[in-house]
Image 1 (tube, rainbow, N blue to C red):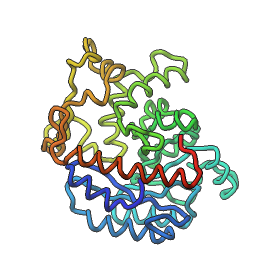
Image 2: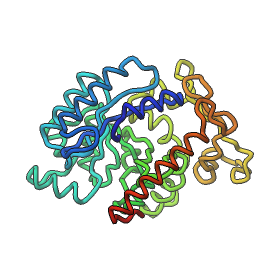
Image 3: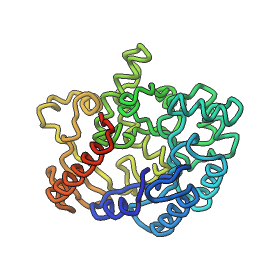
Length: 320
């Protein structure tokens, strides 16, 4: 979910990754679209352009229910069913969202509001879902909505802890996510493991809550279920796509491995990923990316970062 996803798609394709990409749709003017209608058209163009791509799926990505009109959300829900593509949206994330939606809807929660306008369906992947009670969770399950649990981002933004443990136990389609780089920084699912396991133990005051095996399930087949892709990815099975990572268990932080689930959740770093295979093709071997020049990318990124820093300084804004 961001802007100029056509450029993101080109990079994803060049590297050889698999991705679901959504052009952000929001009610105020942004760089790639002046209106929500323009954003929808932008997304439709990309959906048609990449409809037959083996690794890239385009999606609609309305920012949130409180930053889009009822009409926009209804249109996107209908189009997602027409094209059979995902809708990725932040939902039940903040107090401000609840206040705006309650005022708009006569007191409904964000989840109940989405149901009332007909904008919930199995194509929706809801990010965060922090501000959700048992009734909200039951509604999300009823419509087979996917959930992205972004623990580290929610900690950094101090918005609260999602009832992910209850959603997992209730059988919802829930997987681990990272949110964007502003709050998710490393964009590493492995970095989420430790925090997900420990924070849910803390808030539930239960050392047995969220065991490592459940965390790994949410990171793999659970994430695939959230995206309705469990028939293609998420586990090593005959007939599924060959998307595989190889973890270096000889690294000092990984030794010894008594239990592979516990070792991954409590000890692993993202840098322990030694090899990466996507769709049967090796794209990283011995920590070296084979499909692009990392040094050139790093150099270009740092040059652009300097421009961003200068812009921030000139604007007088503070970035933490």
